[in-house]
Image (cartoon, rainbow, N blue to C red; front, side, top):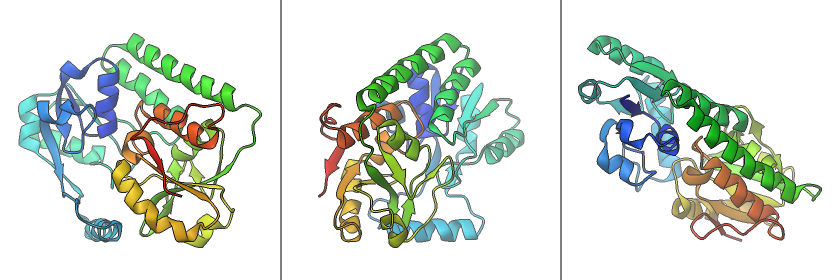
Length: 294
């Protein structure tokens, strides 16, 4: 089966299922594993936001969407040349990837008969279910069950380690200018790690809030997990968070690697957050995953 992934998280799922050799097309943002983007055909492009501030990126997104323009460009001819059997995409967030409807329209125009599977999880349990969906669609359901069983075993180990311990109040900052609180599956990661996610929106879209709203529940720990950034970018953005939470610990997390993308590494994120919240019973996260800013 010839696979095309229009999501970085879907690319990670494909590799986790042992199907990397079947993947023929990816997006310009697919950076895990590192060889994915260099060894596959890139069929989706987008603006390089390197050097832009969070406020500039936010303004660009709002301008594009207000004008009815997409944030991503589908290289339709390149996609057609790949003759895929299955395309993995999403309808969850227009800021994150092309909607499946756009992909379907392009395929109809090109006369391509590929199946389109939209992955749209809203909570951590949904994320795990998408691994099974992909495994079934690609004909390897047993690999999906093995993958999920392994991840659930790791989650159970964290749950056992933090059971009965006090749950620190944790605020999640998914964007800093303007501030956005944690939504979708991200609050679930905090809960699974033994914390209480405050001022969050579990199972719902992340939304813009005020700093006062984020600070009102008096969080003990603040996690800065900006969408589209790895640890270095998260550390830079965390500096802007410090004045708003003078009495809290502030941690920067590799957002794309551990928190934001709904792929298998979310369980790495749970383990890393548990190490922040309960360092006496859960191993401290490896270097490069998190950094305490204050």
